[in-house]
Length: 411
Image 1 (tube, one colour):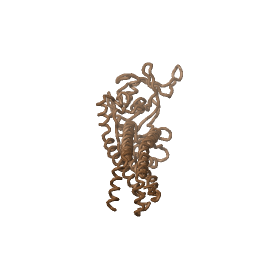
Image 2: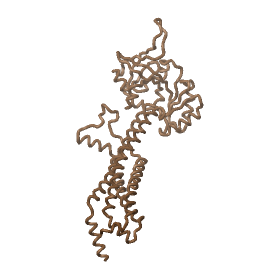
Image 3: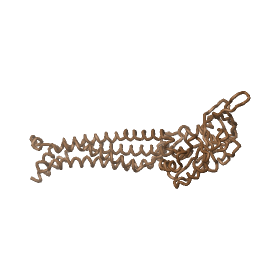
Image 4: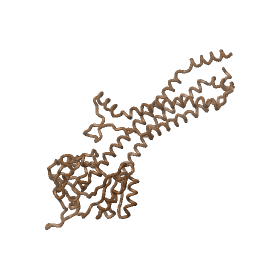
């Protein structure tokens, strides 16, 4: 009798529907593809965000301390107080204002920024990014200016050329009240890789900017800290220590809209790509339902031999979960490998097909940066496992509810 049952089981295994195995493989590969694609896309988005953030913070400060009135008469005392914070690496004064640069028939609105060439390298990388002359060549009284690369290109201005600057304040003349203008000498340019700043910022010496904008002192103090991610906490500490006469803001508040948009975009991309994993999970449901239908008789025999509904449910849950976990593991391995080598892979594709995805003359980031974060990998893995587990609930419950008498009536 035992041999008869063994032979029947072997024949049943041999005669199993190959389409079920195909659906099982399709489900596993679908989960693997979705997980790998999600990890790679999230890593590339993290890489682009990190690259843009680094380039942005090469020309703006981590923290700005300003006077509530728009000026800071005793900026030296504030600078010393800011430097006392253990998280601060350096600080420097600045003067800021709006103006318009004119050369020939071309006019461009600009943000005029006065800096101290000796202290500016402590808070920005402008000294490293300057071309033509060194930032230290900004001397008071000369009225030299460094232009962003895009701004210089739009004005067709080269080092040594003269440009006129028009500021909002007015001056009384024999012919009436006229806007104040001044001739500036272009000493060089800077290229931060961030279009907004390269096309709208002009650097002058701190004293020249103060004279041009008719202010007696600095507008505030800029600071760079050890870890830019700690800027909100450090800004709160400085605000508490400096008192109510100062306004402290960090880089995440200055560029809050941009970073909020990037966060929303990343979240939406995560949801959209997770649908790929969800579709694969639906395939997993189909595979298990087909398996339950195919093994109807075998399930009934197990029930007659004493198997409980819970044990039948557990068998199909383990089967579906194993398929889902296998797809997840493959996807994690492939996704991590591709995310860590996405730059080399893209370069290889560009070389083979003779194409360029990010032309240097159009995009300021011409490579595909990748920043693989453990948190993203963990979230992807946990959600994929949850979907795989949920997909097994209905088929396993259906298998557990099979009535042995009804199933074996026509056997």
